[in-house]
Image (cartoon, rainbow, N blue to C red):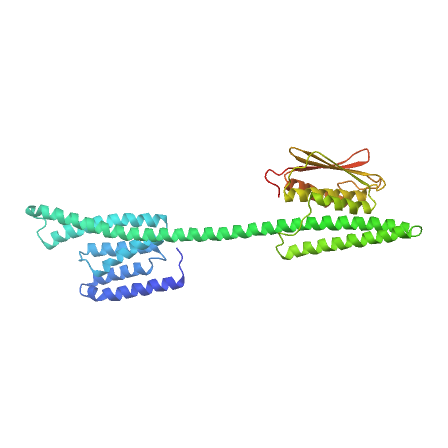
Length: 395
């Protein structure tokens, strides 16, 4: 486990302080106590950076101490810190080796203190008359040893669990923030795409009307000056309306204008008047009883009709009538626009239709409906959209 230089420095300093505190007691013994103290202090110094080495050094120090038959010393408390670190900072293997070391250490310590040392020191615990006291002392030592050692290891495991939980929470928070940012960017991109579609619809429709009026005014000017003036008035009105729409859409790019007015089905009347004033003979019919449509559904109907009529102005035969029909039924509304194509008109797959038809299809799909475009062999161009009715109350 890699730790920062500051943490390693702190561990080394604490291990040095521990060694200096225990050194006077070790000097009261012999060189074995000094060696064991150095091993335990070294184990504490690397307990977080190298927990496996720390556990090994502690075992070596304990075995040296027992093999040389030394008594318990203050430096033996370092074992608690080593077991704690094996659980708190060690890998999976080191962690479970630390738990096994706690159990094995408790058994060895009990046997050493309750059996080996009394035999060597002739304390009389091996006398048959003192069997009961020997068993009691052994049991108490084992329970105390296992409790202290395993408790140290358990404390390290709990600290590790808390640390891991905090890390998981931190990563989840970071992931949630990242996901929220991605969703925000997606919403912004969707809104920009919607505005781009609206911009295309407004500009394409307005330019188609302006071009049609300009051509008509240019041809009528020599013989019918009044018609030319009327065409100029229409161009000015359409241009002003388009400029206002474009400004509104640009404002939406900079601000949240959720309450900005959007076209609805009732606005089709004004749209048809502008298209007719541009010279397109639109024959509108409506069948069935109107059903409530949501705002998005009404926008889809309006924009599809607008785009289809714009295409009829740009690519259709303006001398032939255009049929616009709205058929209502229990499931929604079917919008059909049929116009006559010019002989030199491009096909729907060409660049001229690249933005309009995909935009209409996308609007219909976003409203839960469908759109079909057909350029028939009879020279007629059909746009058929199906927009479902709103299931709740009208928007």
